[in-house]
Image (cartoon, rainbow, N blue to C red):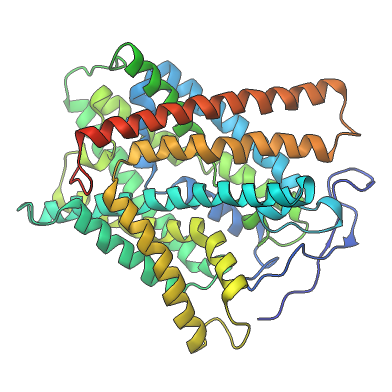
Length: 449
């Protein structure tokens, strides 16, 4: 597939009339890719971002965020995390054109600013981030499939590891047929419909349960060290809820002007896009208190057909959402090892995707089946990669790129963010690892949780 012509954009660190990318210069892409770039309107990118945050993961936030933080901590934390996430992503979006080139990958941008070693470290962090997110998606799909099976036939034959294996296989089939991120198009519409189905079903059934139930207990469970570590782990889940860890890769698909358009997409994500998240989180916690399940559809009561439709929608939406977060790995493998001959659906290219993407998702599925602790995965992902990639690196890269323009107060602000989020990342990682170790003692590998 031929590369589109270089678009007219401006580098952030060049002198510009307004510093926001409105002056036009011919800039090349930092490195070649076999995937499409610069073809999507901003609203399609907005739907990609919104699909990422309104995935079936939202069904777990009532239990993983609100239960350990309570009404005050959870509400303030969600709003604050949204504000700092919007700010950090906007900073990152403005660095897309740094140094006279378009940086279509996070690692390319880090390598341009810091050098080759940081290129490798950033790629490792991002790989860990996306691998764990995708593992969590497969766990979620497995939980939805198991819940659907139990509604039809409650004989205990279909264990969670089996459901996870089926989910991984379906995700692989979808990956074989969708060659790159821009090709999702109509599938983003299906994803939005699926999200609305399971979110509306969860909200309506939770509301009905809440009205009919006696007063709930909203006290924060646990005491001593357990409560402290659980609270710290929940803070990592807060930032995990809003961030993809792959904004440069998503921004690469957007039409020019790339800075203005990614900001429009981000505003869409953090205004309209967060409304469904808040609805399902707050209604779910209100209905069940500190007994809220880590998968909300396991807590609700109502007509079997409604719960079945909600679980099926959650399963299908998860398959689509996983493809978004796996796309940086797919792009790397396709560009590094794939063939340039023929189109994306040429027989040899399809066979390549079957072998390479199938192998990648097999490893994801195996890890998901061995350690199906979803809440712990969210906390660990937020600690090890979301904090460093989205907050620490974004602020420090912006600081380095604009060091001659920023005032002393602005520099102090960015350094405060760098240091503060580094400390949070370390403490959250310790908390998440402690939770995983604790759960691993309670449950054996390949547990049917």
